[in-house]
Image (tube, rainbow, N blue to C red; front, side):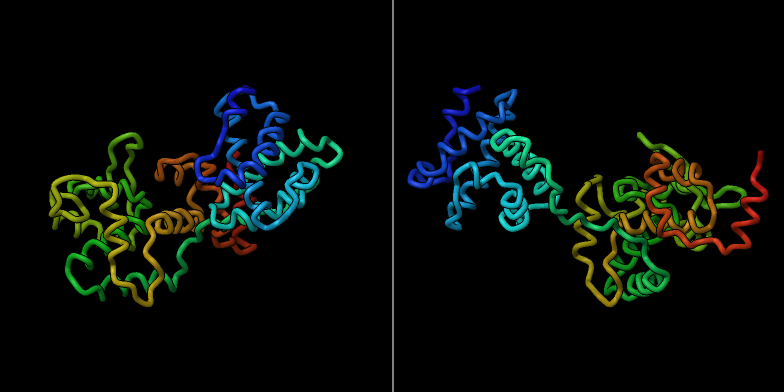
Length: 300
């Protein structure tokens, strides 16, 4: 392991700068005692980025200064601002492990500064649903109108994922005694009754395309990029962006608000109940009388 650390030389760092920061990088990672070559290289790469950042700003690169917790927090916030939040968290975790080995327990673990975590996607509001429906009708060509309306109906009406929408053909949609049903095949095979508001649109489209794909019926093969590419090319308007995951979340929340049993929603969505439960904060709250009635009349 020591040989692997000693041989490490980053490709995009000048010889002059590496001569200043290299000894600090190598000795610090050596103290962290990585257990495999892959882990050592990951630490070396991350510590190199920290040292480069500090050296470029004219900050001290001595380990006693470089690995202070507040320096690592500042690097995560400022030096890694171009990275995704998850990557920034990973960088700081690696650096704190090295810092603990270099500086000892007296400096660790202080409470780290929180990094940004994106809010979960929210369901569409009733006003946004109306705006999206109107936007679909106002698109400039039949192809845009038919396919965008199909996406909206499948998402709001049956909670399908984008890949399920792409694989669906018209004959996968059936009508039984009381509902329009979307029958899905594959790893998460299931039958999903369509919410009444969207049932007529789904059924009419299925009759129109027959055994051809529900979306883009002119195509001859399924491509995972076809739907995202189509949505990206759709003309923008006053409506919110059409997002298949938000459609699916909206379908889940509409059922949660209607009191559909959590296990029923999860089964229809093809996911674990926990994946549905996390959207409970978005569901409409029951009024106090209905809440009391449900609490009184629970089955035992």
